[in-house]
Image (cartoon, rainbow, N blue to C red; front, side, top):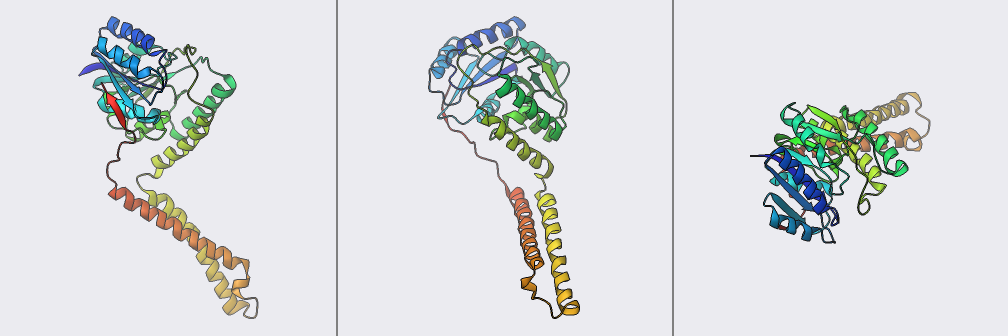
Length: 315
């Protein structure tokens, strides 16, 4: 087995690929690691794939996967994780904002200090304060609060993993932001942090807009719910449904007793607002309960998910 697998998802980074590769190679050769570098071209429309094939011709340790179209960073990481063979797996972005000089320290934390996962922390950032830094701080605070994992930067692309971690988690949707949470949910609790240098972007522009933070918070709610109730959806939906149904049921009992024994000459039950509240509660309660029941059935019968991307070619 190799010492290190370096997984690099990318989209339209033709200007930086060769420079990044040479920088990584310089670092790993100096440390005498056995290694592989896996580039995942996530549907680039520039010359990124051409650059990868050229690098491959000069170094057999380089591998490449090319998607038919842009499927997203999570799918790119999933494809890289499936084929990597290193004891330590390191992910980084291709835009030269992640510093390959951090690789030895990350490797040391996994191999010597026995961490399951180590996330980079870009303490000093060279991004827009208004559009990236402030939203990032809010996002990370929410992630810490809901997950209990004390990391400063969940979304840092520079991370190191033990081999058994990446083979036991599934990155899907846009969940690359929450890989530490996915790992914790699978039982990998030794999660650490390493302060890393953040480089100013040298080429091109960022591929992510402000909407990623909205999507990120929605994904955070999803992963919190799944981590709490994913294995037993009936515990949530069944409980909520039962409580709502009981509210409606007791209102119906109250209306019936009131009409039959207390106020027999009063308004019809259907003319009272409490009747419609009771009816709504009983319908909603039943629907929540059925949602939990169906969730349990789906969970017990689920099969392995199909890949959510198509590969054009691989080298």
